[in-house]
Length: 127
Image (cartoon, rainbow, N blue to C red; front, side):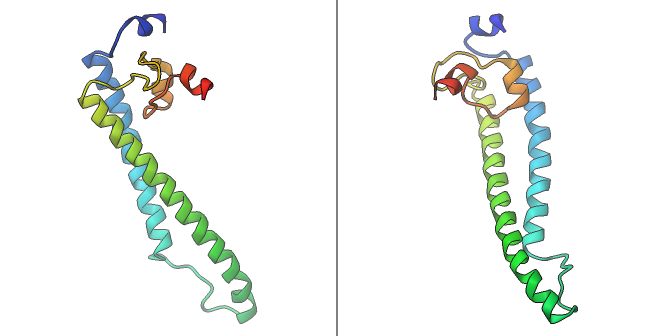
């Protein structure tokens, strides 16, 4: 990690490693987003339309909560996808992994866990 702080940017080989990590996470995130969208659209509806009216009434309240929760998850997933796409842009600009506060390199360990990070641990702790 000390070697990371000596450099101003990551090399092509390191950027390729991070790109592979981001591409994999992006593929998974897009699949998850599509699942959330399809569950909100009831494309595979397993509702209680054909069951007793009392049971349906109780279920309707939880359906609303579930739809709101699903919508919130979908919004979060969209933001996550956007952050990953922005990270790919930073890779192509060769500005990936540079802390936007300290202008020092973010540790490889942090980027492997949070590949869309724009703050070093130091900057994050100072927030």
